[in-house]
Image 1 (cartoon, rainbow, N blue to C red):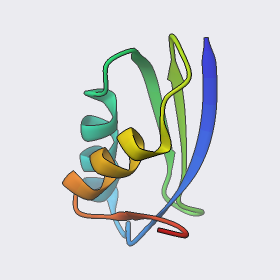
Image 2 (image 1 turned 60 degrees about the vertical axis):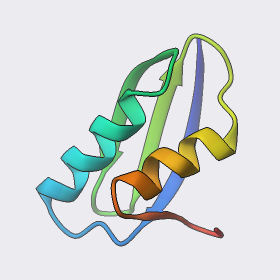
Image 3 (image 1 turned 90 degrees about the vertical axis):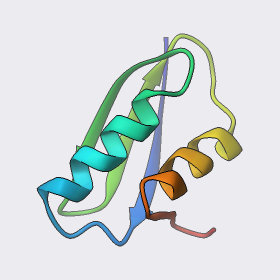
Image 4 (image 1 turned 135 degrees about the vertical axis):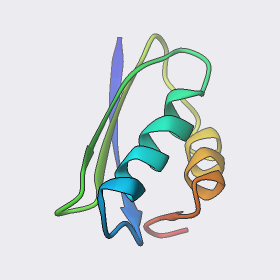
Length: 69
């Protein structure tokens, strides 16, 4: 198992959290997604390391951006 932390920009409510959790959770191999609305942190646990591009695409599909993107 691998856990990586990302910072997502633009989340403001529980619906935002749900959208990000759902889209990131669809990435193959992801087993858990924890989102902290207060600081924008998204902890992603997966069977194998994920590419930043895969996570970025999922976050963008939810309507948000990774910090630094």
